[in-house]
Image: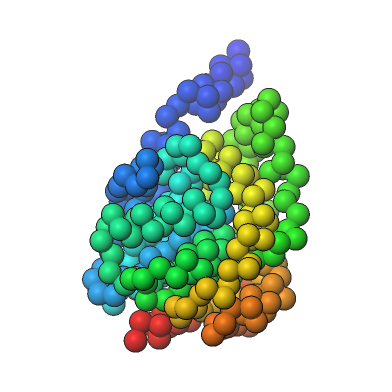
Length: 300
C-alpha cells in the first residue's frame, strides 16, 4: 500500500504541481521578468558600464553564464535572459526559429534601452548572434559567437522528432520528467568533454529540473528540427555583416565540428576566429577567464 501511495504522490507532483514555481528553487539568480513581444521574459541584470547581452544555447537558461557573470559585472553592465520557451520564460505562440529569437533579442534591447551593447551568444545562442549580425542593425558595438551551430547538414536526434508527434510527444515528455536526468547527464558530458572537471557539482541536478519543464523540452525539439533550414536561409546573407564579428571555438568541441567554424570564419568578411586548445563546447565553463578577456578587448 505504501508503494502505491508513493507512486500516486509522485504522479501527482509531475502532473499537477506548479513546476515553474518548483523550478525556481534551482535558479541561482533573482527572478525578474519583463514583457517583450507577448512573452514574459526572465532576465538578470548586474553591474555598470559597457553593456554585454548574453544569449544562451539549446537547451539553456540564464545560469549557463554563471561562471562569468559575477566577474564580468565588475567592469560591465551584464544582462542575461531565458529565451522564450526556455528556463522560466513564457512560450506564447512561438515560431521556434532563429528569426523569432532575433526579434526577441532586439525587442529586449529596445525595451531595456540598451546603448551599443556587445552581443555574446553560445551554441544556438551563437547562431542567434549570427542571425542578428546579418541584419546590420545600428546601436550594436560588436558580436561574439561562441561555439555557434552553423552546419546546414545536422541530423536532429530521433528523440526530437518523436517529441513533435501529437499523441506520442506528450507521453514521452512525461517519461522524460521521470528519467530525464540520465539523458541530460549524457548530453552534458558530451558538451563538457574534455572539460568535465569544470562542470559544477550541482549542474546536472539544476539543469534537469529546469530543462525538463514541458515548454523547455518542446522548444528544444522544435528549434533543433528547424535550425538547418534557418541556417540555409541565413548563409547567403553573411556578406551583410558590417559590425565587428568574433568567433570563439574550442578545438576539442564534440558538438560543433571544428570545420564548421572554419567555414564560417572564411565566409564572414572581416571576422576574427579565436581558438582554445583542449576545450570542448562549454567554453564559458572551461575557459571563463579567456572568454572574458575577449569581451574586454572587444569593448576597448
